[in-house]
Amino acid sequence: MHDRAGVEGTISQAVGRFDLRRTRYFGLAKTHLQHIATACAINLSRFFDWSHHATVARTRSSSFARLRLHCA
Image: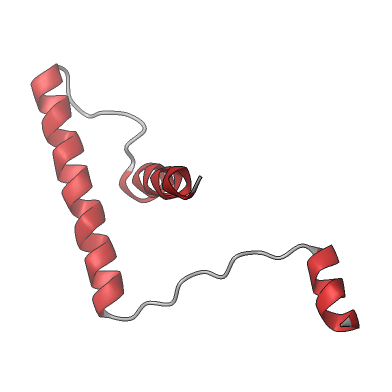
């Protein structure tokens, strides 16, 4: 389950920040090269975020979970 969440996050980042939904090129070799370049860009982006201690988004909690915290 945790592995899938990591993969889904990577795919979401690739589509959202690096526009991986469509390829710019025709042909398998050029498309493969674009995917390799995008993977490198994702890794560099994550490295720079890590090295600059970028804050990580907090996970949303439901209103029921927040209510439980206040009542405890």
